[in-house]
Image 1 (cartoon, rainbow, N blue to C red):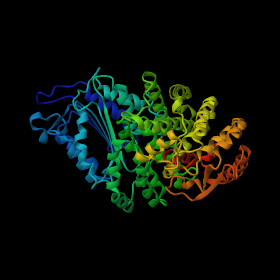
Image 2 (cartoon, helix red, strand yellow):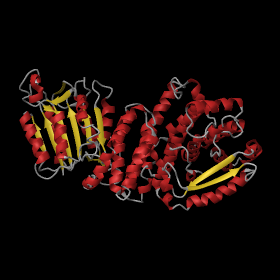
Image 3 (tube, rainbow, N blue to C red):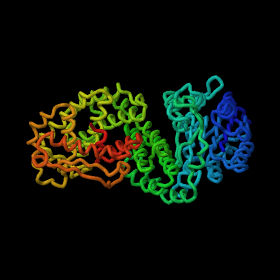
Image 4 (tube, rainbow, N blue to C red):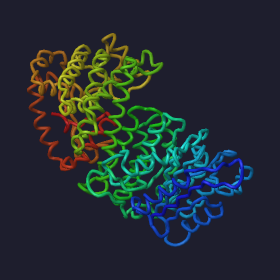
Length: 628
């Protein structure tokens, strides 16, 4: 059951609380849209609209909704009126509230959260259009405790607050400006997204915050949810049919056994959430997520809902720290984690496709932001205070960006939403990077291979094959200079420095443990040169790579492509032994390609894209199926 409680308080009995003129209007407008007109599919008999109620009246309605009658699966609480922070807690002011006695005359958010926990509400949306409402984050600590993560309903919460903890919430023409922006999204006047039939509060909050962020108040949005997506309302801009709020939400809420397992992993989940302040770490993320997905392998709906919940929870947190491609990497990791569960059309497939769309959208936003930064400062890609280390890491960083652009282009095309990625922005960014960083397009690590493969394949979709030829030329030339010597994937610190020293001197005899033996970048370049019709260029240089070992790895199935260790076949060749010219490798590649195409898993679009994304997140494997 879905229930809405909308409270608007214009009238106040005690000074200094002043009379308002738009709070009741706001509550009524929200109630009309979501309940009366049916856009929220909330229960009309049990949903309530309160105009300037006393504290006792609010408490009575909350208690009746949460504890009387059928269990509430999704509860949305809207409040417009006065509010404030006192002693580190946030309070909502009822008609009879007294600022000198907030703890006994105003609604404490801490108390509301405690009620929600006790009632075990599966999903909760809280919308507050009041001054200092960003202060509600002070009370979130009531819920955000590792000992309660995993309890049913305790961490399925989305919040939109109209202003920062030190800001006023403005009214204009009898309506709060935050509620006005919210209703614009709910009615479809402002587009939030067009690919899902429902809107969740976090994604709406993001749009509202961006719309009002340049004014005198900055809405705060936040959400944490381990069990799927909170469905605030139907999406009037859904492009694929009539929007509808699924009635299957309860079936995706973990049963007690599933809940116990999630609770047992609570500390790891919480640590992962906190660690996002330091940036997104794909290996750390998979280390926590993969065992949980494996545990629920036979309960696809629970596993997929859990993954979606992590995406909805972690995405906004990553965004606030300004890592340009971090949010895209998160959604990509969530999609990749579902590889073993995807069957065409099942719930995991649906969630994966949505996560892929979000990945592409975030790559597009990151492209726009990076393009703007580079136009203002051509050194924007340099790591702050990196110094000498960037001689090693900058070439990897440059190719990584190119790889994500190429992967996003392929993903958008494969999932049938090519306009999610702006080709104009992508191509402009590629061209600017090649203009400013051509000397950093250097073959330095085998870690670059999956990014190169994704970029080269994506350039066909983007219509910028000349850029792929340039990148291939820069990489091949530098690889010739080092006689095919590359570092292994994942070098850090002293080992990376040792490799740099060897590369500068040309003597690699002392750094055997840092070298990629065999390499995957050389065969990728050879095959791409063949595809460009330039095999003769490589043939003339082949003696440079005499005795260099090459490898192409093909997994037994791409369903396991995100695993730390993958079963499969290594196709290994040595220049000057089994391969003397381009034609030799191409002949072998044709046989390998047949093996790749025999994997039935690749008939699934979302699995195919998920595997491609997995190769960028764990760059010790290549998505050869995307190549040539």
